[in-house]
Amino acid sequence: MIRNTTRFGLRNGRFGLQNGRFGRIRNEAGSVILTFAVSIVALFCFAVVAIDGAIMMTTKNQLQCAADAAALAGASAYNASDTEVRRRAAYFASQNFAVQDTMRACTINPIVDVVINRDVNDPWVQVTTHRTTATGDPLRTYFLKILDVAAGAAPTRSNTVDVFARAKAQLVDECGAMCVKPWAIPDRWHEQSVPPNTRFDAADGDWYDPILTGYIAPNDVGMQITLKMGQPSDATAPGQYNPIRLPPINKGTPIPGAQQYSDWIATCCPFIVAPGDTCVTENGNMVGPTIQGVQALIAQDLTAYWDGSKVVSDLGFSPRIALVPFYDPQKTPGSGKTEVIISKIGAFFIESVGPGSQVNGRFIQVTAPGTPCANNTGQSLVQGIHLIE
Image (spheres, rainbow, N blue to C red):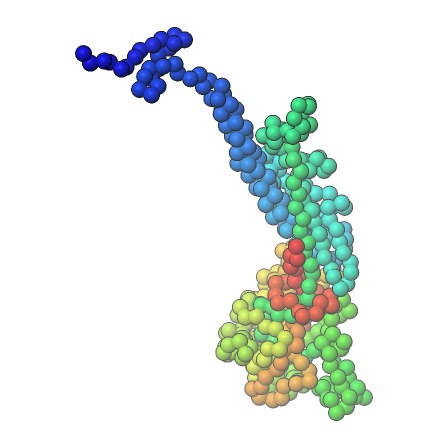
């Protein structure tokens, strides 16, 4: 007779199989509850990271964009007044949006949130944008209040969090620039001759320095100057009326031609011109192309004018504001096709083109993109704005 070793038993009202035998099934209900509880906590942690964390990062980026724009705008008015700096910063901040409880404009306090440093050696504007309780616009969150660290006590964490961003923009002298007009005028030197000479003469004790003797801001802002000579008696040398060919010969092959010269007066020359560049002069008066180009330029903003302290234009920034290179007067060009060495870039409001194609402009100080100078004095007629933090 074969014995059946499998035994059946009823224990606690349940059948089970253990080691080849049916027996009692272990009760694991408690461990499932514990696992579920831990999972819920983990899910909330993931929710905080995935939802609240993402909202905070997004808001931070949006506030940073607003701060950058506001700082750059404020720095663009650095040479005007503190009131204008704060107005521009606040306006441009408000044109940007960031999450609060929903997408809202980035409103700042122009007195508290805009800081202006008037140190001539370190000019900057700093702007802070915010979503904070102190400023009345905290960022709303969804899960941080649930994960309150004050265990066992009444909840202390609100459903809001503070986020802010800060940017600082600096106004710097620009030495190189694009969109210059195809003229080069001699910078100012210290004249020793009596009566004064119209040409630099080192033998007479004349000397030149771009800052110490040259045209600078704000001293020369508003001064009228001839940018392009019109009469042979005014030429710096026979055939030299100030037109040049671009680009500089150290940056490419200069492009000749009356039509190209005229077009670059009316529009933008795409080459960067900077101190140390060498430009070829355009030999001849270029009467027709000059008149054509300047008239086309003035026609873009006919009603603009100089009011004694600034350029007034219905367009805001007049296209008649032009950048023109200065050349080193120690190397004044002679007659015929020759070269000039660029020493710096000036800014002018183009007022008129007169008899014989003489072009008159007025010194101004502007902000424009370009190449920063090695030394920042604040006296350049062309300045740029750069974010420094």
